[in-house]
Image (cartoon, rainbow, N blue to C red):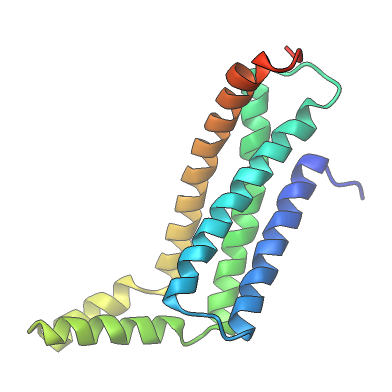
Length: 167
């Protein structure tokens, strides 16, 4: 089976991001500070998958801005779906204590401020859950994918065009 090069880049980047996440966890680097870098890594991988997705779709043929946008969103969408599935699997089967620890931290912080533990516990447990986290991850990555695809197409079409004679 031959995989479209546009999608191949997205798949490779998503798997690379997943392997890096696993290495940070099993290497003992899993902490809230590392989570920031993981988020920035996902943003970089989405940007790269969109950029290379658009570039591969442009090889040897004339394309339109709408076609480029479609190729970018397709590559970013594949990355988004694979990464979201990995996030679900990661927190469901690998780092299974993550949400329990975070919920306990939030509850303790709110109790120190004088809140009612029963109300706080119900709210935190219902909101800060794996399904909500996965859903927010999916929606966030989709929004970033669309924004980055538009930016890459605009930069490619209207600014990089000045340096090349592609269009």
